[in-house]
Length: 112
Image 1: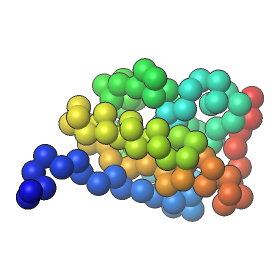
Image 2: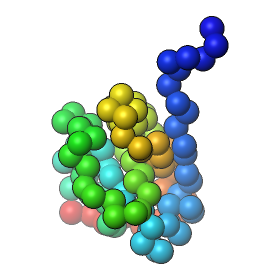
Image 3: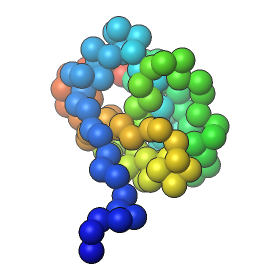
């Protein structure tokens, strides 16, 4: 009734903002797609922690960087953010539209 216990809203950033943050070494990008998807193509610099086994406690040290989660379209990264919230991890940001939005913005991916 008063919003108690209501999940905190996820913070979304767009591809252009992520590109800038990556260029300035301000972000730890975590791709939550499965290993095969990641191997096929991913954003340079991303680390892969698949949603199927995602555990916020296993996230690499961010060393003062903003942790941004990313998937193909935004759904799985949102689910991973829910797991972070339940674990009281201070991670609340994901790439709006995921890898699809990144590629639609004409930004590069690494393949293979």
